[in-house]
Image 1: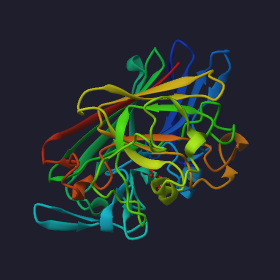
Image 2 (image 1 turned 90 degrees about the vertical axis):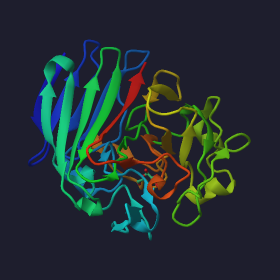
Image 3 (image 1 turned 135 degrees about the vertical axis):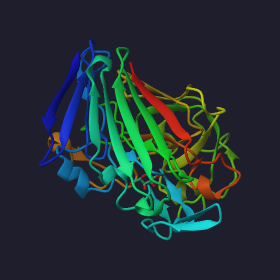
Image 4 (image 1 turned 180 degrees about the horizontal axis):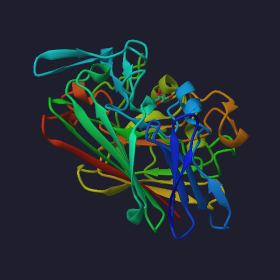
Length: 343
Ligand code: GAL
C-alpha cells in the first residue's frame, strides 16, 4: 500500500499508488494523465490495461490524448465559438472548423501541481487556468484527484471554480484494453452501455444535430452486452461518418448521482471493468484514429487498439439549448466523479 514518486522524463514525475490487493495505478503531473493500471485478471496474470507512453515528452509529442485530463471542455464545439451573457468567445479551430478537446494547448499539455494524500491512496493535481486561457472566460482553479480504492476502483474526481461564468466539462481520455495495452485490436471486447439513446451528428465535423435518437435497431445498441467489433463496419450512416464508434450516448440517468453506466469485458472474459459516473453522457470512442506506432515498453499500438469511455456533458452542449448545460456560474463549484472498477 502507499504512494511512490519517480521521475517521468526531464521535469515531470510519476506517482504510483498501490492498494492491498497489489493493484497499481500510475499518474503523472504532466497533463494530470493516467499512465498505468496494473491489475490481476481471473488467472492471477497482471496486465497494464491502458495505452500510454514512457515519458512526459512522448505524451507532449502525440495528439491522441492517451490517459489525459481534458479541459476545460471535452469533445467538440461547433465553429469553435460560444456565447455567454452576450459575449462571443472564440476558441482555436483545431478540428476542421470546430474546436476539439479545448484546443492545441489544453489541460493535457500542462504541468499540474501534485498533492499526495498517502493515507487515502490519492493524488490530487491542481491547476490555475487564467482568464482567457484557450479563449475561455474566467480565472479558474481546477483540481483532478485520482484515488485507488481497496476494491479496485479507480476514482477520478474533478473540481473547479471560476470568477466569471464559463464552461466546465472535463473528462478523462484513457484508452482501455483489458487484454493488456500491448495486445493489439480491442474490438473483441464486449460492452454494455446504460443508454437508450445517442446524439446523432452531422457528417462534416461530427457536431450533434441536437436530436436524441433511440439506439434500438441500430449498431449503437449496447443495452445488452455486445461485441464491439460485430457491427463496427456497419453501413449505418452514423457509423460511416465516424469511421467506427465515436458517439455520445445519452445515458439513462438524471445526472448528479453516481450510476453504473457501462461494463467492458476482455475477449477471454478474464477481466471486466464497470464504469460509474454522475455525468449525463459518455463518448464511446473505439480508437479509430490510432495509427500504428510505438507505445509504453516497446508495445506496438494499432488502430482500434484501445477503447475510450469519456464521461461528459453532450458534445457542443454550450451551443445546444436542448442539452444539459455545461455552463459554470461565477463562484459556483463544478464537481463531478467517474469510477472505473476492475474485477
Ligand atoms: C475523441 C473524439 C475522437 C478523436 C479522439 C482523439 O474523444 O471523440 O473523434 O478526436 O478524441 O483522437
